Length: 256
Image 1 (spheres, rainbow, N blue to C red):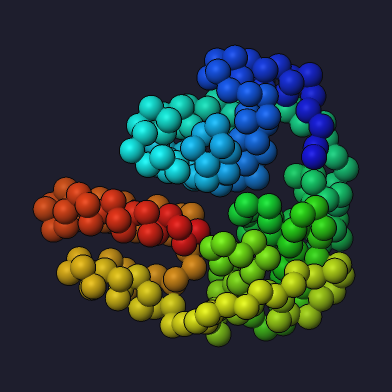
Image 2: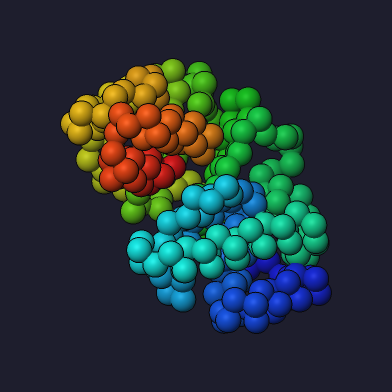
């Protein structure tokens, strides 16, 4: 685990006292927010209701889904942590190209045109290369002739990474390894099912008007937020009910 600076220690201690949480709980959330680049977090913390998700802008999910006070605590804590990460040197810098650093990929790859993180996995996309950090081990893959449009994890399988390309949904472990140990495959069902109809059919099952019929089943954060915004407009217009909106929002958040 990356070490904290003095400012980082003060931040964790002050937020621990502010929200009456243990030091370990705040550290867990700090790492989760940091892995989400300060705009999102996926976490599993017993003091905060178990597993949950946070996105900047007020969308917060906790295990105790009807505990609105807990949701507010998580939202406020994550916002404070994001602010601290943006304004302070929270972690002691690690040299570029070192696993665990903010620039964890090999330095000879340059700067990625896309990057992200989920759970304990980070990825960065470069021309003809995909770098993945899993449990502080970095693997670089040859993306061949694939034009990567997004990288995602199968829910519940931390070592099952997929990406979308012009050929559909493809398993990362099927790509040639340039360097590193690679990520083992995990048995999956209906791994590469048609991407266009996943959300469309789900909406039709509940007689909900279709939203963006070309959205893939593996979504980026921006794509998810756009769809949720459209669903909110349908709810406000009376086209779908509050419960249908909540159900679809939860389903969409689980896809990222």
